[in-house]
Length: 422
Image 1 (cartoon, rainbow, N blue to C red):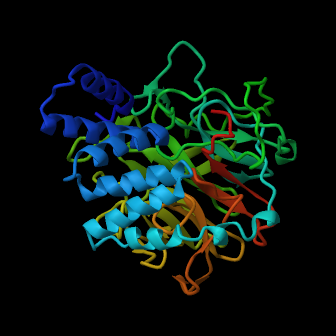
Image 2 (cartoon, rainbow, N blue to C red):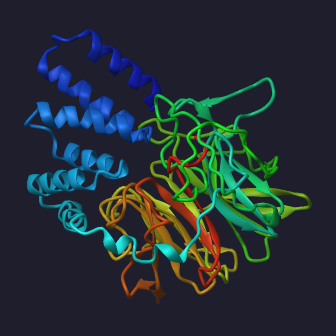
């Protein structure tokens, strides 16, 4: 049921109380417990359980070496991660990540060579839940948040038992001055993060240990009509702000739809600005009940929409696609190809003022989790390959959802590095 928080409790209880369990059942429980921690983004517990799994079962599935390597990297243990990537490479030959990361983690210096070029500051708009995917809107900043709902009725997402995601808006970016003090609460026992959630990044050298009062800048729900009882996620606006393309669970006009295997996937929708709110919500024609489409990013002239999907025929988990938009008509989505997409997950694209691409990936070599990458596009091709932005924009945790000016002089991004709020 994708209730990973509940699954963790069940598997931990089983493994604690059934010490003499059949080895086959114990192995299955460890695999599913480790995978549940992985989906909750609890990398420390994922590392612990994957370690027990590969240490005690020599016939472990090759993917367990991959997931163990990824958890180790997300915890900053690159030498140990390198060994697991090497084992993954030895256990199979189809997925190139094993070989690529084994070589990459021999020398980490390239990820830090430009670290003095950027100053990363934590934003006061963050809450104790996930806040991510910033987007420019009329002098303000839109973003996605799972901050607690108000009112009598409170709905939680089964995945990690946090509120559903909605679109929020801070009206004045000049009020979003970076906070040089970092506020950190105690770590939740289950990690407390939906897949790829986070806060805006903290300063890399901050070391505040105690929980302090949290300075905040007021943010409000972006729209009464776009936000529903389901997830609303990343969005992208037309250059005149007359239209918005946004991500939502497969729900519109009061009806929710599921895939053939009973899952409510993500879809892309478009809406028109009507007065002070939004209306005429329609789903895009290439959506499908059986796969997800999301994370939209419009080109500067509104002629192309970049987005993410796990549709059949891709290279890995989720890939970046592009589709033409002309006179209100949508073309056929095209995969951006193997220069951009890998056996892992590519997501959260953004197109800058020069028409070049930023995106997050855990399949290209990086510092751990999702890293942010840059690619110059020519005729839709990343003709110079992709560039990891390096520290301090990237860290061992998930870093994603970057937006910036065309000169990359200033911008915003999201991260679940531990020096955020939660």
